[in-house]
Structure formats: C-alpha cells, structure tokens
Image 1 (cartoon, one colour):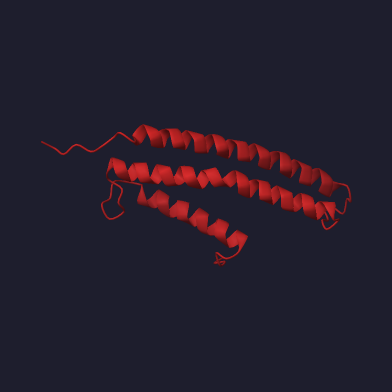
Image 2 (image 1 turned 180 degrees about the vertical axis):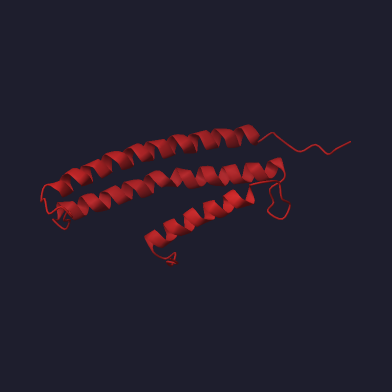
Amino acid sequence: MNQPTTTAAGTARAAAEAIRTLNHLTFRPDERAQWEMPGDVYDVIGALAYLVGRLPQTLGQASELLESLHGTGRLRHDSGDGEQPAADVAAFGVETREAAGTAGRLADGLRHAHAALARIGYREER
C-alpha cells in the first residue's frame, strides 16, 4: 500500500520504511552504504536521536486530535456503547503520554551515545 508522503499516515509509513531500509544498510560494514567507519555510526546515531526526539510532539498531537473530536461528539464506538469512546480516548491519552516519555528517554540515551562517539576515530592498519 503506497500512500503519498503528503499525508500524516503516508509520512509515518515512509518513516517506518526508512528505518527498515536503515536496518538493512547497517546489517554489516559496507562502503557503498557508508557504514564502515566510526563517523558513519556517529552520523546515524545523531540522526536517530533527532528523529526520536520528534516523536513526543507527534504523539501529543494525535492525542489532542482525538480529544478534540471526542469533545465535539464526533466519535462513535464499534460496540455501540456511547460511553466507550470516552474511556478509549482517555486510555489512548495515557498510553501516548507514556510512549512520549519513553521516546524522550530514548532520545536522551541516543544523544548521550552520540556524544560518547564524538571523540572516537578510525586508526589505519600499520
């Protein structure tokens, strides 16, 4: 299912596919993939820290959208229970806040890992 990246879902899918591609490119050292030197690791970890650091905003905005839709009475529940949307939207909010906190901690860890690599270089064989 190819969805254009000009939509929110299409952009999220493209990000997921980019990470899948990254996993393939970093499977083993490879000059063509620019994955063979400490600087390559540094660049990738820095970019991942930047990427993960943006997730809390997206998660918060997803929660805000659902809360707004619920607040205007625009949500229904598959069960037909008129009270269930409130419970599910609240649960979604709790879980996305937890996920945002986890993403923030992951971003911090990646930033620290990135900093630890800052002074690491490659030594040529003698």
